[in-house]
Length: 274
Ligand SMILES: Cc1cc2nc3c(=O)[nH]c(=O)nc-3n(C[C@H](O)[C@H](O)[C@H](O)COP(=O)(O)OP(=O)(O)OC[C@H]3O[C@@H](n4cnc5c(N)ncnc54)[C@H](O)[C@@H]3O)c2cc1C
Image (cartoon, rainbow, N blue to C red; front, side, top):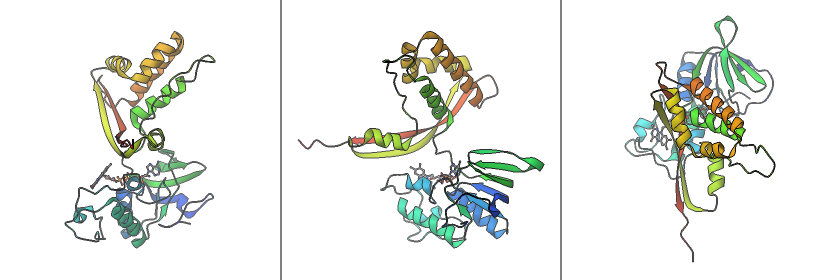
């Protein structure tokens, strides 16, 4: 099915070849869809989650927006309620769902784009697991509130090196940056409330060597691995870590600039029932 309320399923479909492919069904993707409908474009919005407004669903239930309803509306559909009042998280979720339905936006859920690359004839190719979409133009409408960036990639590298080199040796499992499920699992039953908020951060150093030196002095899982891994394994980890920094460096002037996301966790301790 290929509609605002439908799920994607395997097999070829008309949306596999479009004029425009929009990645993400958040505010940006839905707004783009609104204008593409008005222009009569042949397009598809692909969304990795099984619902619209997934970014909001992941946020805490009592969240109230800091933007009044009049500034929270998207083009073409007023936000219901007092325009000077502040909507709740759930109001936003309902509003975004209604927005997609009102304009019959062609959204395919459960459709995560794994790879975006240039295809033949100046077109784009979007890889979604077993399926490929070809498009003349692509709109990346996904805010970077996902687990990615340098911290996520560096954690993946540490995890790779955390396999114990010899039986009986326990190596620490690095904290999974930005993994909401992992945070919830670790805090489960230990707090009275848990608030998760995503943000982004930029690390900036005069050079790659200085950046790596700071990382080696301050990153707890890296420090632990340095003291526990055989020297040649750690050497290999250090080389791969520096290579990652080089690949993800956003600066071209000899400096090292790494962009990343993080998850701010505010956990309140459960009051003692003693
Ligand atoms: C705690 C908090 C409070 C906020 N409060 C406000 C507020 O009061 N007012 C305000 O204006 N803004 C607020 N914001 C910011 C607002 O949420 C974002 O600016 C907005 O959600 C960005 O919209 P977007 O469409 O760009 O991205 P998103 O809403 O993040 O949507 C991106 C979509 O892309 C999907 N996606 C990601 N990767 C892929 C992939 N590979 N393939 C397919 N789909 C993918 C995601 O599942 C998601 O549905 C707040 C943000 C936070 C974190």
